[in-house]
Length: 239
Image (cartoon, rainbow, N blue to C red; front, side):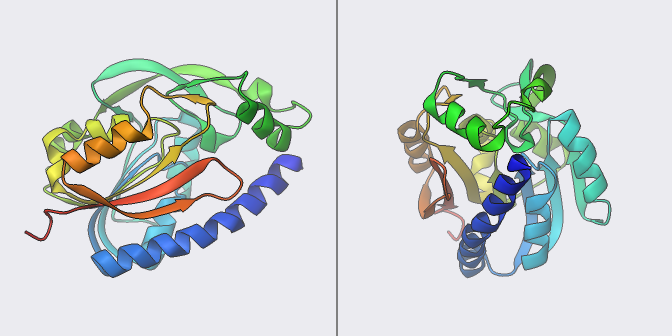
């Protein structure tokens, strides 16, 4: 009950941010999206959000979690323009540990600091009686570079790249390789708490984006979390 109630309120608060994001992308990109890439598709929330607000030719969606992928596949059956991939994305092809979290949105490729105040606070609100902790488990998954898959799929350009990978976003971006020059907008989250043991900080990510001619055009704090949503624009896209 506590878990469902907490997620219900978070969903409705997050909808305010989603409206801002939609407004910014429509102003910059218009109502038409040729190619949308959704990394960390979860249960199809972003697929539905973008499809409701934009006209989209093709969607490529990636979700490595076995549990999430089954639900994603079921909930997106009606989308004819969608290709699903049950694989993780990172800097190189490998076989790695993946945490299936009881809070399915929190499943991640990075290690969790269970001693952090943020972890304890999150569990207090989402799993007050510790009923769900037994549903956390480690599995092994395959990951690949996004650049490799885009080349295999013969994708020439990405209008919008959305990334939500719970602390692995920068790794996904670096996996674009030279294809980063063909991405118009990158929309991602960055977590500033110490629950996720990332191997990078925002300063490193920001510097990388600038070096690749991307400019920050949107930043917004997510309600009740030490997490921000960002949109970066490729400054060479109209040249």
